[in-house]
Image (cartoon, rainbow, N blue to C red; front, side, top):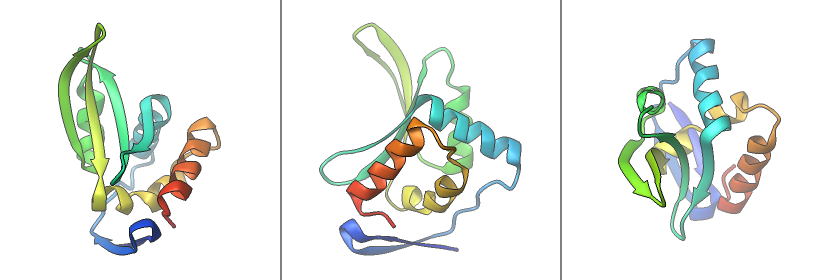
Length: 122
């Protein structure tokens, strides 16, 4: 069981996170996050999102199977057609050790570190 403290909301989250031990799967999921993910949030909660074109939803199904979260869509905004995978709350905070370990040094890693700082995630 992972123990993750989110200082921003001063809450301890306990979540049973069963991440894959398969390095290929971990790399695939991280590749989706680096290539199409966004660390974001609204006024109330931190969020990790990944978008995929509506004719290619299979990667989002894989990420949902591995990490949890929810797939929304299909959406059609400004002639863009896509599905959106989103994870928040306890499931997201349980991923922090996984992301800390697997996100490579790149722009997405810098975005992730700024996002953690903004949301007070340690």
